[in-house]
Image (cartoon, rainbow, N blue to C red; front, top):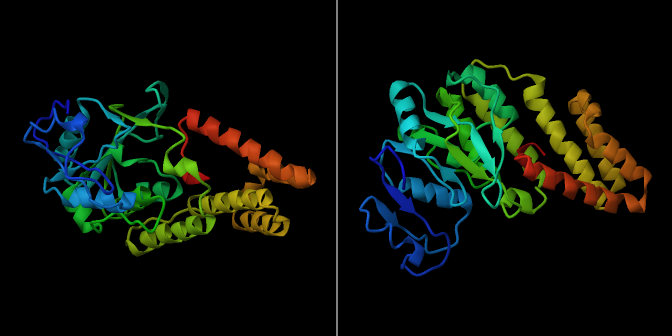
Length: 309
C-alpha cells in the first residue's frame, strides 16, 4: 500500500465461502508482514463484514478502503496528523474525487464546510439531513471513539455507514479536511443503485437517526428542514413507486403525507412528474419508470448518492 505514513497494518477480507488460499493477485503483497488475508468463510452482510474487519485489528486508528475506491499516498498521514493534533475529535473525513467505472474523474464532492473541528451541536443536525461523510473510504476513526459509540456497523439498515457517522457525531467532535486525497467510485453495480429502496425501512431509519440525536444530550435543535424535509423526500419517492406499481390511491396518500410533513415539498420536481404520470393514465407508469432510470443514470454520472431519494 503506497502511503507516506508507514506505521500501518492491512487486513484484506474476502467475503463469502472460499478456501483459505488468497487470490493469486494478492500473493506479491502478502510478503509484507504488515499485510494479512482473512477470508470470512461465509457470506456476511456488508455491515457485518466491516465490523469483523475492524475487530480484527487493535491499532489506535482505523480506516476501511473499499476495493473500488482509491487512496492517495497522503491519506493516512493527513488524517492521523489531524487526530493527533485534535485529541477531542473522534473521527475525520475529507472531500473526495468522484470517479466512474474506468477511473475517469466526474466531479468533486465538496461539502460546504470549513476545514477543522466541528462540534456535535453544529454538525449533528446537518448530518441528520444528509450523509456528508459518504462512504467509509473517506473516513479515519479513532478506535476509542468507535468503541464508545457502539463498536459495530448496524446491519438493520441499508445506510449502515451513515448510521455510524451519526453515532460518532453525536458523541464526539468531527474533523473535516478540504484535501482531495481519496477517490470514490460510482457505478451502477453498487448496492444502493441496483434496486428500489424499501421506503418503510427508510422512514424507520429516519426515526432511528432522530432518536440517536434526541438521546445524545447534545444541545442541538434540528430544524424542520433537518428532520421533516428528509421524511417528505422519502414519501415523495414512495408516491412515485406507487404510480409505477399502478397504486394510484396509495400514491396520492403518500404525496399528501409529504406535503403535510413539509409543505415546501410542493416545489419539488417529483410533484409535477407525479401529476403528469397520473394524467397519462396507464401510459404514465411506463413513462415515469423510464424517466427515473434516466435521472438515476444522470445522478450516477454526477456523483450523487441516493441517500436522499
